[in-house]
Length: 355
Image (cartoon, rainbow, N blue to C red):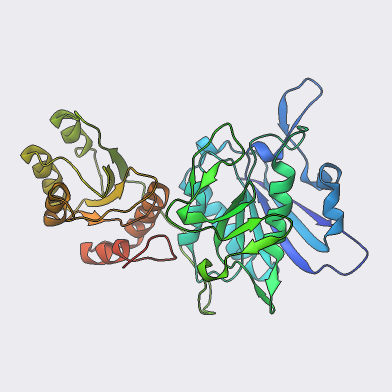
């Protein structure tokens, strides 16, 4: 993947107060209409023409763009690795990072980056748009400007939000707690199981007690994912044949199973036997709820007690997006089931609530 680079100083009146790296991967935000009306990527070196209010900020901005922007529907772990590598390799050169990404899989990428960048002490803010930056009613300008402000904001000499997050439509969310919930409205993302990190009005109001903080340890970069995983969504009437076929996927190592309510699943003997047989063969099964809010509590009801008994791992209040990216990363680094279970059951960077 080729990367193009451009440097922008937003104002020459005073020395820049912060240095920000923007990584443009693709998505609606970075598109403009050409003379024929078609959407094409715009040159970020001309960003000041599209967002002249940036001149009011005292920043030194570097933009690294994927030479061939990617629709977020085509994003895969190799792109997560590239984005993470760009941040890791430039970590000491910048005060904060903004990642421009298509909305469809943004929550997956933000979740993955939160696990990849262990001991992160600087902001990594994901944002995008529902309308292109050239559209009169575009949400791109406000989303981008506020994301840059969040990425550059400091208090007592320290970044205010030293974690991977998503900014969209006036709210700042923890990246690995976020989920896309709208395709036609501007409020595209929600975080049902975790409070807002900040809300942008006339001023940006930060919810400090819910912002993730780590000791000032050296940044550790995790850069591999095992894609021998799958997601199984349960539904009334799911057949024995389909479950058998699912767990017969060659080289399958991990499954995220989307259950009902607080982690409930059918209690049919054949259903439990198929899952237990797979677990006994070394397949890791991670239980998350289909509900946007709430949590998995295996054993609360009889319909989840059997899952606990056969070795299914309860995912508490983790999102599907965080669950699958975490599972891929952990499986790439661990071989022994006890260690895998330990890492999946415990929070790595605030992705799940452990009582």
